Length: 336
Image (cartoon, rainbow, N blue to C red):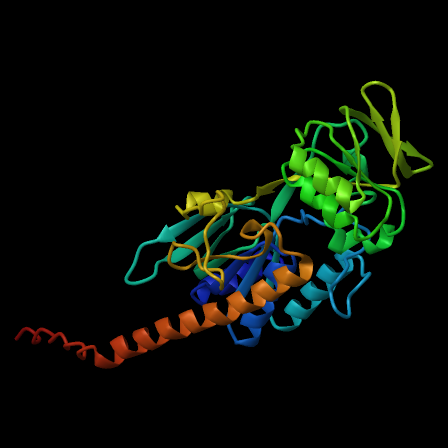
């Protein structure tokens, strides 16, 4: 790792970075790796708050299935260090465009007072999972209170599974989770189920339990069930729910990036936002992205971003080649 003030000063003396990546998860590290291999000067600033920190293992990532998430990030950081990428353990407070000809440069201002100059910025700050306020639930998040069956369903297959009705998507989630177990119950909780919902759930073999949940029951560090407001207990060994996706997109909003119809920061397929020079990848732009998907998005963004920089490099070279030669200023004749 090269998180030192002297490294940053050296980069500043060299004219700054080609790209500063904000966020050191799978998307951000993958972006930095491809750019570094394109011989770009790159820094990654990471606040150390990965979304999947509560999970013991990451799943569905070819050759890395079952690896603890922290080990994947540590390996990625080690690879980047070998390519000369600067890794800064800090938080970015603000990104400020620096006006100029063409695409502006950016000042990336860190919480510790440092400022990094960059030609382009990539925001890969991820999201937070907003959870319902149910006693005992937050402590089990990522362990046996889960969201994505593609990430965790195989590990809890064929067990009694519950789905907490907190979101319009909970019905679809229950119908999906039935793929992993024949014993699935939807706890209606705060969800108002339509007659069509009930018909589909029943046809799929998903039981419906009415009443609000009041407590997540844990025994010997294992989820045992959910207690309802009337005191009844619904047994389950894992509980799925749809969290509130809360993108960490304050930096992008501050830059004036527009949102799409769903309220998310709008990007094209390669991560470009509507603000020239600003890119967004991973869960900050796509809450559905798994680790492997986010890494792929970072790689694709890096390739497109490098082409964007090459175009600018060519324009600068042409401007320099066609600029008229500087006119020599005559010196005054010596006095006689």
